[in-house]
Image 1 (cartoon, rainbow, N blue to C red):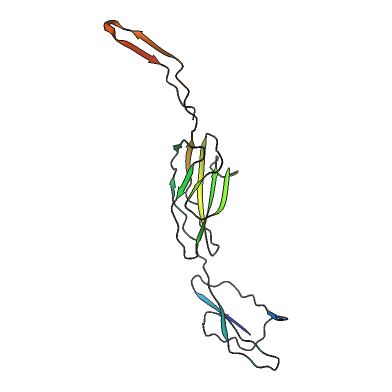
Image 2: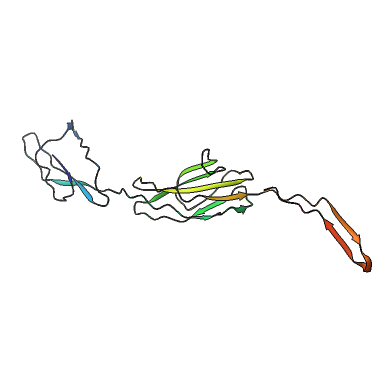
Amino acid sequence: AVYWGQNSDGDPGTTEKVTDGAVNKYQPELSAPTGVPYYLRVKTKDKTGNWSVAETIFTLKYDGTSPDAPLLIAPIKDSFVASARPTLTWAEIGDRAGVGYALQVDDTYDFSSPVLDLIGLTTTQYTLRSNLGDRKYYWRVRVKDGAGNYSKWSSLESFILDTAPPEPVVTARADARSGGDIYLTWTVVVDTI
């Protein structure tokens, strides 16, 4: 007999549940309110009809609360990054059930084809393992707690990857001026990113 409920001393009664040889099976409803403990209490019956004392064999405290979305720390707000393998950093989210992080990086703000899509990260920073090309990237992070609840995605942040040095000065000129002064001029090179 099985009892599934909020009473830690709940009586399973004497209604027999499904038995498959030596294995007893019971699938309780899992619509428990968040944070309220539920108890699985069992009594067994021998071949002569004697019932055992009820025992609590399992306690569940359902966690249906999503964790908060993490705050992205760096890089943010279109900051320029010179490394082709940037390090992305976000704030830690604490949860008693433990957490893992999912990270996405894409060169479009809608994340329709991420260049990086990772799950199960356990730290609050990740350094890309392969080179990215020079352009603007967007990134976001979300949390999955130990109970399987996902946070919303973090706010979207962006960075501009620029690993190419500027072109050298191509045109320079020096003119002698009266009084011994020298007048220097050159073409200003504009970065392409």
